[in-house]
Structures are given as structure tokens and as C-alpha cells.
Image (cartoon, rainbow, N blue to C red; front, side, top):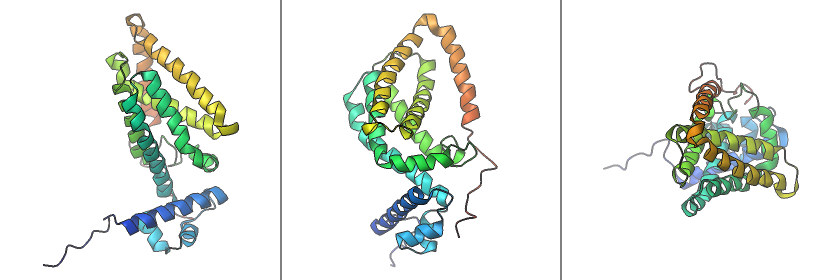
Length: 246
């Protein structure tokens, strides 16, 4: 009997090495030249692979950026799991996860500034609210769901349902601050995390007070409406930016 033929999507050590090489080469070029001046052909040449091989792993530059988002999320998740197993208070869990987020992002600080110029465009598929970014966004929100679920904090069910998304929004705000932070070792970002994590912990406690129920209901309704506007699950007009890749 002939051995089964490997499918095109089968992962092999060599394939994973090639994929990582292409991604690393892309990140270097994006850092050096910016998004618009970086092409798939240039990335392939830098990685020492054929253009067809580059397209085999990544359909476009946008796919490369989404792979970068996925890599940084996986790094953050691996770093966060031990801390979440150790801590039980909402504040301590949030502090750990947020500090580790900055720790794992730090090697990409300069590149993140370059990427932000494109990702900040609300019509860009690289925008963290875009449909193309949905898989990583959902995985990141899932981390905050685990953060909330594993805490000993007493949180009303309606707030518990929305809190992971609110914490994800908060963490996106911290990342934006970090991108623009020029302080030594990002001291201002870490100080912001320490202060805001404490504030958020107090706000959650306050919102859980039965007397705050009417205000909480109104605020959560607003959050739901805003989320539907910011993160559409489908998009008919998103296009892959491949026209400049030759």
C-alpha cells in the first residue's frame, strides 16, 4: 500500500521554519520601509524563497500582519497562563496579564509604531476592529473571559458577560499608549497599568452594588450598541491589498 500523500496544509518542521523565516523577513522590511513600500516580491527575496513559495504560506501582506497579531497573542497567552493559575483576585490577574502584554510586545515597539500608521485607518483590514482581525480579537477576548471567570470577585451576570470585551478595549488603549511611550523601559506605561488596574477593580466593585443596577443596565446597553458598530462580523467591501505585490 502506498503511503498517504501529505496534504498541502500539513505542517512540517521545514514548512514551519520557512513560514517563520518569511514572517520575520516581512517584519524587518515593514520596519525599514513601511507598509506601502514593502512588497511580497521583496519579502520573498529577503527570505531567500520564491515568490510562489511566499504566496503559498501568506496570501498577501495583510495575511502576514494577521500572522504577526497571532504570534504576539500566542506569546502573551503562554506568558499569562502561569500567572492566571497563581492569582485569584481580579486586580492581581488584570495587573499580571496587562504587564505581561507589554513585556511580550516590547521587542516590537519600533515596528508597532510603523504598523500603527496603517492599522489606525478604520477602513484598513489591519485595524484590530476589522473583520480580518476577528480570529485574533476573539482569542484575545477569550483570555479576558478566563481572567474574569477565574477570579474570586463577585460580579453580576450582566456585567460578567460584557466585562471581557470591556477589558479587551482597555488593553487596546494601553497598547496605544505604549506605542507612543518614549519613557525609559516604558515606565509610564507600566505606571498607567498599575493605576488603572486598581481603578477598574474599584469600578467593578462599585458597579456590582445593587443600588447601581439601573445605571449599570444603561451603561451595558450602550456598550452592546457600540460593540455592534465597531466590530461587524461580516464585511462585503474588504479587499486584500495585493495590487502592489508584484
